[in-house]
Figure (cartoon, rainbow, N blue to C red):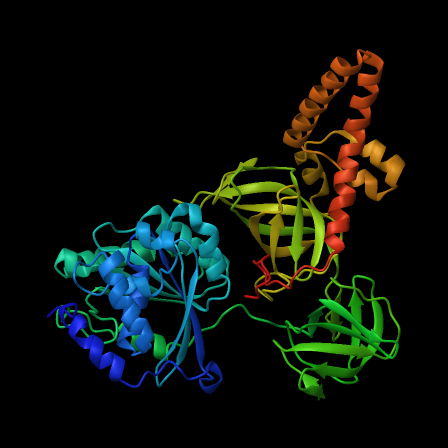
Length: 545
């Protein structure tokens, strides 16, 4: 029997029931972070709404608002539209789609959950990747009528790339195919073949009707052939593993605290390991060493700090440490590098061209970076294909060439110092997510990388003359060089028209051609020194993830 009909009648009962969502996450030590993803209209928001409803995790005012919103924006006729519990933006409700990531906390007596509802549209893939970057498990929804679609493949590859190792495949809208077991089995076989080489540790399949609640929180009489647990029971009991965090303590310095002459501390969030008073630390990339004398927190001094804590360290010696440096304990000290091998998810509107330069943000530091594409990933077959450009939502392997050594570790070992973003130098937009695969020697693949970077040497020589060795790194890729020449010619013609002097126009053009890239680079470096809000591996909006 459908569970949609009783929903309206249950509103009063739910309002009067004791809500179980008010408990703080600290009271539920077993917290699971998961994401719902998949193609457009596969029922992601509806599934989360159903989980919230069936777990009695909706407040009284939320139920009243849902009742009103369902009559105004709902797509379920006179029934409650559970998708509206997470689709809160005006544009989302008008179009009936998910655009931004929506996070919801809920709890059952057995476990607490933080779920990220992510969009299915290809143009919002960047939002989906943001939600997946903190997930330990992914629920991938598939419309039983349509089967596996390109976005199903893309989202599966992205969650695999981001270290998610446990997948629940929710084959939704089974009511629209008559709960046909053959349809369920076929889609299950297709997805197993798709995910064969994605490195998932576990894949579970569930025949659902998120709208009606079949197999969501309780077994459904419509699927006597399905012997597995309901989805919520699975979420309550699954044991997950995520990106490992191995090695000594790592503390990216976010801020140097100097409130008075007697105190100098280095503040940040410990992203790996434990740190004790008396431990020897190495400040990278300079390599200076000292000992920890105090671990200061808002709640007082600590003898030991563990991963995830925000702390301020004081050191025994006055060594040079600034924002962006990394304090490391133990003998396994990462080697700062200027070349990284990485996977990229391109989210910019304009294609990425091999050799283009951007600002890279990794941890708490910024650096100039040049990207050399090696191979693009065919989203239909996951095969690597040679490429020199990458379109929006494309995935590629690439070399990242930095203007100075940075502390980076493979993403599989640590998310915070293994994940980075690329920022457009002119618009300040985040245009790519990156995952470090490995750290390369400066000489490794250098000839191949140099050959792949289209550049001009006029600006390089001028930069070397005016700014020294660092100025020689201001290479300009073809597309930027062409735009520079075009705008310079136009400016020179304007000067010629206004003054009637060809010599003055020529001098102006040469000066513009040389000085504009230098001024842009100096401004970029100046802006890079400003302390932006602390960010997680894939955020530049001030929110840790």
